[in-house]
Image 1: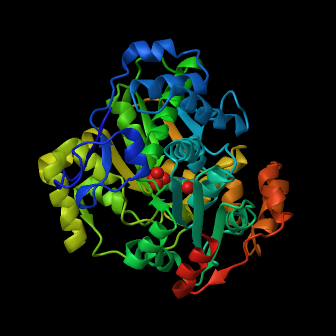
Image 2 (image 1 turned 180 degrees about the vertical axis):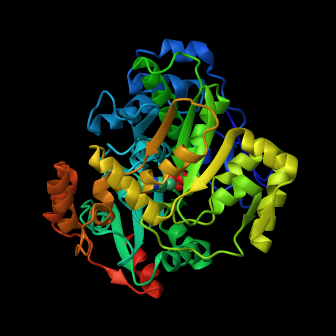
Length: 489
Ligand SMILES: *Cc1c(COP(=O)(O)O)cnc(C)c1O
């Protein structure tokens, strides 16, 4: 399988690249992204064959259908990373919370959020590729919360890769910050930045585009790569769990093979939802993918009206911060898949230039064949969290946004899978508030209160964070980031 570019080819790059090239150098012509030339059709035979398979066996066979240029031994080792999840045999349990509503829990990995699903195996593959090529890579990440911990965790002590992770000091939860600053490995560096997430991200972008920084890296023999959600090396692992969730429904006798289901995906950068779309395209019987958002509901508007408009919006902080995103990177791959490279280039250039693009009526109806969307504000999320906690099911604020889409958007009475992208322990002050406890002073108090009130356990990987020594103390002004990084390198 070769990979091509969403905005077409500029004539100076090669026409198509291998999977390993696409993940090591993820930026494509005209600022576009890499996409596979085609999506393999898995068909019913594949689903039948994997009815009794473990997650790893299913995943390996699925990866093979893509015919990527990664040796089987490396793929197997990468998938062994799922053995570090709560249940090594089933890293993604499916839980019934109502008659026709099931939650696929994507958060049972080391950092308790769904980023581990892709970053765990991806980190292994990237490091092995770098080692095979005898190259040194630097992964730079700016995080508002979940990506940072998952990136550090996957590359910890890995060969040929170093990670610098920037986060806005005071802009993450206590748990998220501790997950970063207590990571102890010689190839990891965490820097707190004075400012908000936007400041941090733009400081990183300026650095990455500055010639003297890149030439300093070159002198040291270091190449830059990215592990953010546009890297196809992450997307490929985010197709598999949708297939797994479907097979779980069949295994539990909730549906017959071939029966259609709805998927509800809480979305920010649209990586999780893109994985669902590719699964549908590969032949998984999905009726529709329902996108849920918080009040930063630009995706709701886009899918309902065809208008994607940044000019009338500014980012609002919510209790589901991983979805506080206005420029959703992976919708570009949907545009490409449906409307081709010329039109994608035109629409994305209009977004960059005017802050806005508009689909035609027929384009909108093509989009709505696969998607519908809705959103929920924080108060409604508190109510949802409270309601399900009373009946014994704990959910976090991101997962809670799915219940609006579940209740409003389904046109048929089909079984529905909603995706839980974080454990409640990562957003415990909001969960405490939802349960009526006002004014907790921080995560440690909220965790203890919720755990006692609801009689639920806090996993050791969260509680131990408060006991671990802090390794990374640096908090710097934006201007000092470059110096800090060069010192580290
Ligand atoms: C990253 C993240 C999301 C959004 O996922 P996308 O693939 O960017 O749409 C949702 N919830 C949580 C908890 C996350 O960490």
